[in-house]
Amino acid sequence: MLANSLVELDRRHLIHPLSSYRGHEQVGVRVMRSAKGATLTDSEGHQLLDGFAGLWCVNAGYGHESIVEAAAEQMRRLPYATGYFDLGSEPAIRLAAEIADRAPGDLDHVFFTLGGSDAVDSTVRFIRYYNHARGTPQKDQFISLSQGFHGSSTVGAGLTALPGFHAGFGVPLDWQHKISSHYVYRNPVGSDPATIIDASVAELKAKVEEIGPDRVAAFYAEPIQGSGGVLVPPAGWMKAMADTCRELGILFVADEVITGFGRTGPLFASEEDGIVPDFITVAKGLTSGYAPLGAVLMADHVYQTIADGAGEALIGHGYTYSGHPVSAAVGLAVLKLYEGGLLDNGRKAGERLMAGLHGLSDHPLVGDVRGRGMLAAIELVTDKDAKTPLPAASEPSRRIFDRAYRNGLIIRAFGNGAIGFAPPLCCTTEEIDEMVARAGRVLDETLDDPDIRAVMKGA
Ligand code: PLP
Image (cartoon, rainbow, N blue to C red):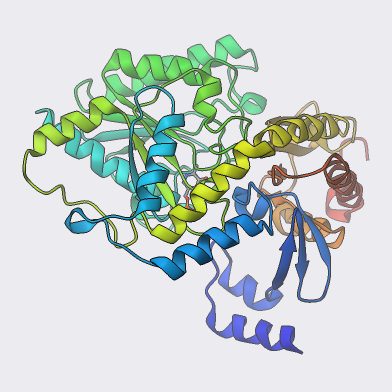
């Protein structure tokens, strides 16, 4: 009864992120009611294993009392403090210091945002200011990767290269450029790691030459492209791109909104990649989704240039909720959990997940299995030799998600037929095995779909 009225209220009043408005009016909402560990319960009492940690954010898993207590205590004591007027709060200061302490190299300075999109926006503003401060204001062009995702603000959506975020929105902006993704499974240069790295480096250099060598400000890349389909670059790719940026006098921004905070193993994927970017953006796992928070980590040389350039002048960038004390208190509590065993558990669970997914490789639909840590995908095809994507008529995104849901599993179903996994780091071996078993059932049911059968090679 309650659920039904909620469905109706939702249909009438709530605009959902990333949804087909007309489609949503038809299908309605599935209301999540509660969660514990890696299991969600919906309003009809269905139990679902959350193979996607909400939106790749609930890295710690659900129901941690220490996080709830930290938030409640901070709300009681001081629910809000601005960072304007040289004021501040203890949790924001402590969290900035803890992050800086753990960040690679000289990424010593932290600017808090509310999430990932405004973190990416902030880097663009900081980089423009930086170039202004050092007397190179003509460096105002930005490059990112095809298949990349950098948020849903106008600036972030323009750096993003997923068509659904562009059409009708007037982006990308004319200073936003793209080069090809490393997409190993479908790279026109083949799948040899060294060849892919060389091709990416050459393309970046060519793009900078085309735009104008003294015009390019920065290059953005995710250590693993998330929303583009969990695309893992060849080992050494991030380092080669970071080195090339340095050589070309371009700042390198690692967008770790998904990969940060244990998703791939360590706190920062950049650590594994052996790089010290000029900026790292984080969000999601920073608070494990218990409260909204994002951050920009800024290298010391950038900070000093901006600070010197501004002198006593105010640097006009900041949000009402920059460094929100409740979100920051949550961030501190979550960090304790990560370092109190969750990162270790995530590493083990990640190995189990990858092994389990590789075990599905022989399924007739599985063309590719890829991932690192607790971030993985399988890409479905109807012909393994030709790597033919699932037909649009089989509505891969909706039908695969629905099949998973009916099997008690939440996954991300990408439009091209890839299935993404990003479970909470707290998962037990049994939970990971059960997720993989349920995913296997989803594959079998997908194979039975008449729209797939009709085009399956050898059918
Ligand atoms: N950058 C990356 C790599 C992301 O994956 C996302 C969101 O998924 C964002 C930025 C935007 O973050 P938010 O949705 O918190 O604004």
